[in-house]
Length: 174
Image (cartoon, rainbow, N blue to C red; front, top):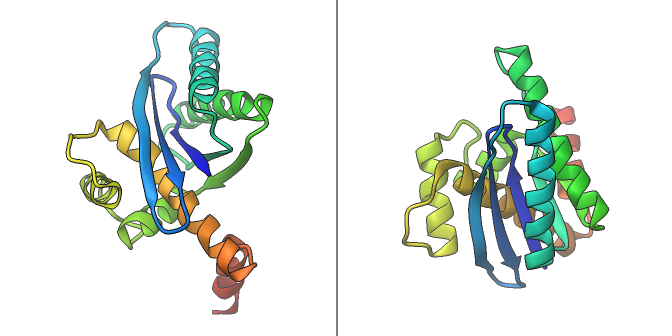
């Protein structure tokens, strides 16, 4: 199963593709989209078109994407939400299964703690995928989101229970 992880941004959008096999995750490709232009509609169109091109090239079955978190600046949060929307629309149009994860869930899945630093995430992504070359920050985040989905999906397949639903039930009981 090929998973496309997307770390959305209105200026830089990171992405990573992995093949989630039964016993391991295999790195396919990663990168970041440098979005140009002054007008937001133009930038959103670029995100849509470039994610659409990545999907057409690599044919993933799943898109995993970071949920919006509240910035100190409401304008930044709105732009982030719109960038997410452009990527989600491209994936929806291509028929991908779409799953969203909170930043803390992603860090927890990759590093083991929800308050991990960007450096820790980059280090663990490289370690888990056996990569040696340096990763750009947004690119590493895109791969981390794909890894997070691979882990949640594997848990769901093994147990027959939606891992995110199970996690929420445990949290409520405490």
